[in-house]
Amino acid sequence: MAKAVIFDKDGVLMFTETIWHRAFQDTLRSYGINEEYTWETHQKISGKPSFEVVENLRNVYGFEAPIHEFVEKYRSR
Image (cartoon, rainbow, N blue to C red; front, side):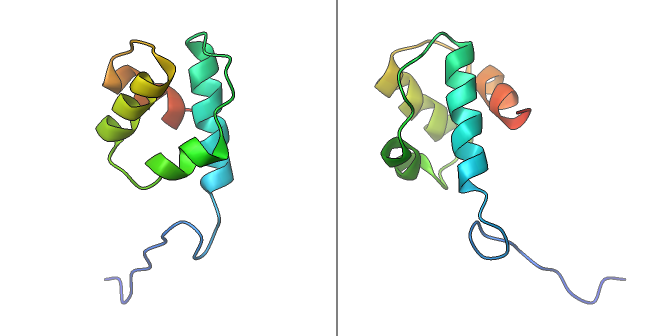
């Protein structure tokens, strides 16, 4: 039986936000969005639930994609 559990919030043990930033940018490009996905935009959505993230990105970049499809794509990158 486990004696301890470690929860890693981004930036504590590993800073993974740059990886997620690139995954979002690559996913947006796969939908034909070639505008730059800025760090400022990324910070606004960081830590939010997936459905909220995709809804925000759809509003900012004006593309249509099912939430589950977009989430699968960015998580696989």
